[in-house]
Length: 154
Image 1: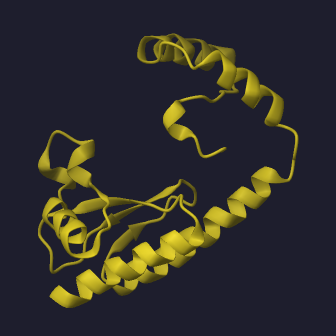
Image 2: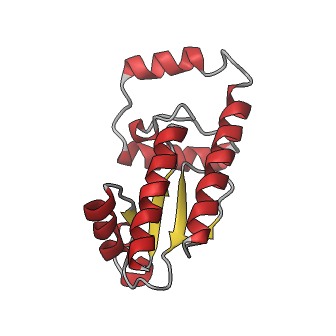
């Protein structure tokens, strides 16, 4: 929630019979988050109780803005109602998200993550994950570039 998801620092609250096994599994996957980061986040997590409500509102607006553009372009959105990304099926005129992504990079200077990056099978080749965790101006610019590229080939 502090937009540092790649650092893999978080907490889990729940029934001990569930938390215990999950904790054991996480110990296999993650060695240890940096101690200074753990201490810093422990201090700031509850400084501003309204922070999370504001963050939720900002991401709701980002999702709304991006979804509106993407749906106009023919993407089918799988609305998570949360998350810092949008999972979408690519427009009907495109066969493969990897090829679409390469086109977005070469012609528009923007990128997404093809769905194939998340599976060993080709089941997700027609899907993309698009990050919305950027400043509004950058997100708007990226969406405009994406729109320009797709409009050129449609």
